[in-house]
Image 1 (tube, helix red, strand yellow):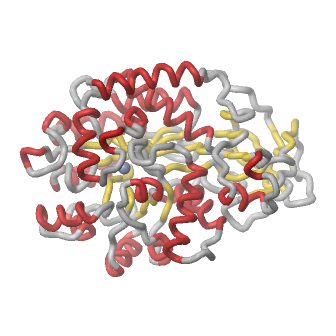
Image 2 (tube, rainbow, N blue to C red; image 1 turned 135 degrees about the vertical axis):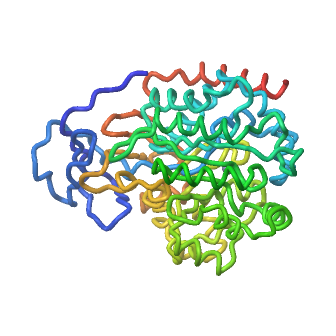
Length: 454
Ligand SMILES: [Zn+2]
């Protein structure tokens, strides 16, 4: 894929509007140098240091690259599949598991490419993926994902997911999709050693991610926590997504979800949870005190009628909250800017119309960075990575709008015009340079039909 050259000091000049995700003034834009934000330029000013070239942003809304904290890339192969189009979580999963068990290396590669391309075009620069399917022949699933992330020039937290509790043992997934703890832990260690980067500008990070209470044993949860501690990587799982799951925890473990989390050594600031909907007041306080983070997935939660996460109360308690589009079999899009709109509207239904637009954009940027344990992305500030999304509100849907930042969510922006990752333009004029989208759709669609046909 082509990677357009970025000059050494670029002034992204005088944007139409800016959302910095903090209190800083970048009304005059910002200077990019060495892959980082060198300087924010206050409104009406010029950069205080020299610049080599400018990008005229006078038609663009500038903001930090959006960060997606929960996804299952492989699920782009089973979007809008008739048999589960109108089903809640447990039957949805039970119908999909046998289809997913047929995943092949090439179909996964295409699925990851589709998911990342969609995310990138929606203004997303960093994505977390939760991959927990390792049927025979899929041993290299995370390696395949890492290859595509690098080709696309994005950042990712790739989680080595796992399932150990098969149907025969009282779990939900079929036997063929579960693995032994020994295999999971050995592969987790291999992946951390091979791919996990630390520090500012990390391109790929690895986290450990047993799938959910109803698909894993307590042993793999505890052992994953111990390994995460040993290698200083993050922990991820689904928790408190549905009442079915809460009932499962009660009957299988005799515990509510947060008690279960604590019992396996996961109630800490290394952990982020997918969904985090069904918590009571006391559980929210405990999560906040522990610094455990939540990936809010509003579209998926509405699609499967799972419930509404108590986002403002979680944040008030100290829980870092970010956004996730969730897997494409329950959304069924991978669009981060539209997810921010969904989050705004769902949380307004819960808390009232005074939930600000900027707060939803904050979840999609600064909040999501905190959820992934990163301080080098998610805001516009000097020294942070030059991960930027620029939207151009000039389409029909924006005509007659007044506040450009509010218009992105209220008028339903769905596509960025320009996206930069680490100082490199990855989206130019609404396109990914070098990506044959039509060819990708053709090949991915064929793989999706084949997967479902069996
Ligand atoms: Zn999920």
